Length: 248
Ligand SMILES: O=C(O)c1cccc(C(=O)CC[C@H]2O[C@@H](n3cnc4c(=O)[nH]cnc43)[C@H](O)[C@@H]2O)c1
Image (tube, rainbow, N blue to C red; front, side, top):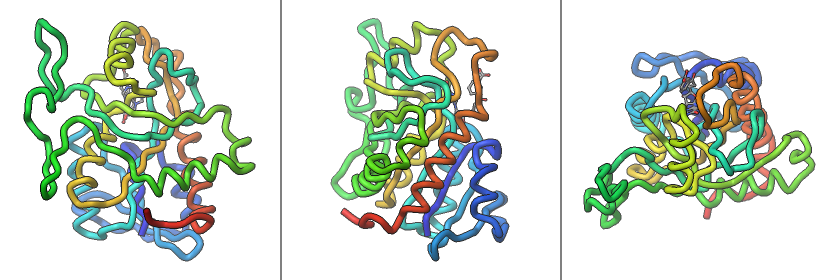
């Protein structure tokens, strides 16, 4: 099974149609849409906005179904200097917690600098950084080396940053981009990546840009365009899943 996770229903309207007919199940109080594509079962769940909702939903999903892969999709805000615009596509190479750490007179110290792991698996400690699964990334790269590439305005691969407070000023966006090297920010990804790392489940994240991280101006946001871009990319990926291998 492939599990798809998005914060809100706006981010999955096309996919629910694409997967229909779907069985709708209750999974710990959340609606879970169970469908299939090319003979492979696909589960889609809305986790709600933010890290706690994302971690709770992921834990539930992994405990109930233990999927072969978890793919987060949705909207994101592009950092200044990323070269991304509204409607473009971003694929995460890794997820980074942008806020977890300490703000000191000398600057921001992340969890590694504080010597406080957020998660441990065997001898491995996880701090602010969570890599995406290499073979899933390879599948997406193959996809965008094909004619499917022409159906997307711009596609960028790079780090994503998860925040608790949406960056509604240009200066905050510039500072986060400089500190992390991130392409864009969101409010769920790192939490899902952390739970997947704990359970050794392959993780991938694909977002469509709904807004630029700048001085907040909602008139310039287009959540629908961002959501559609991400969903179209996930559809392409599911349609071409068998074209490339499924492990490291
Ligand atoms: O009205 C606002 O200022 C506002 C702030 C953050 C998010 C929203 C949303 O309605 C989107 C929620 C959803 O989308 C992701 N997202 C999209 N753009 C950003 C962003 O610039 N910074 C952080 N998250 C963003 C996020 O993952 C949420 O799930 C409205």
